[in-house]
Length: 358
Image (cartoon, rainbow, N blue to C red; front, side, top):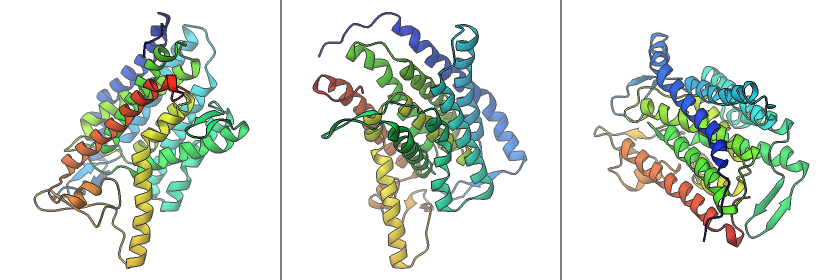
């Protein structure tokens, strides 16, 4: 398959993405050490449950990640407005508000510890800004079915469901050092790779919506990589829901803005599997009459003991008794990288055959 020519000005569309990425990275690197000290002095700790000694780690550092993503996006909006004298795109503003709302919901959850049903339903509120401005393309190409135009039902039904699922599944698929930040880094990097390479495959300029998606994904990538430096094993800081929910909202916003429905479906297969395993687990403990356990239990040698393969990050510890937290996270990140970047390759290579791009 030969690559089609793309105008040199395509590079201009990448500059805002790089600006958002670098700005978000810098915010986390500069302010996270102070946030760690502040949380420690305020007595805001969480127990690092997957270590035998159960150390207390400052918790809630995700608010710096939230600020970093917002700052990266606002920087691009500011330069677009004051330097280029262009109107701010409503899709980018909607994404910004949704991310902020997800952060507020996460902060409230960290403070009041909502019940599970409330945790699942509340992220639906964060989708309201995206629905209000009807973000996204209502035409979707579904494998084995064809192209369908959902009209107004796309914004009213698909957008809120997609955002709610991604936010909830991101929140559920975490709890180990470096897992959330690592998964976010991989997924946002895959989105950016897809957006950058797509014009070279289909021969079209990057659209405004794709540029906006790239800005959001770039800010998320910069913040996630920087946070991973502090959150990787052994973690110096835990994100809390104030960090996990905005990460999910930013990811959903980027995928919706860029009309990357096929990429989203493939990329979130492990997250869907994790959700289904959670439902099976709930049914299992109800039938057995046993108590719900949210985390694995560490043995004295650091290996993990689990009730069964009831979440995707319990599968390896269930079948391999020598699995440690660090090794488990590494395997999960490699798996996600294979799926996410594999999806990019499949969708781009398959474009001539009617797969990918839109």
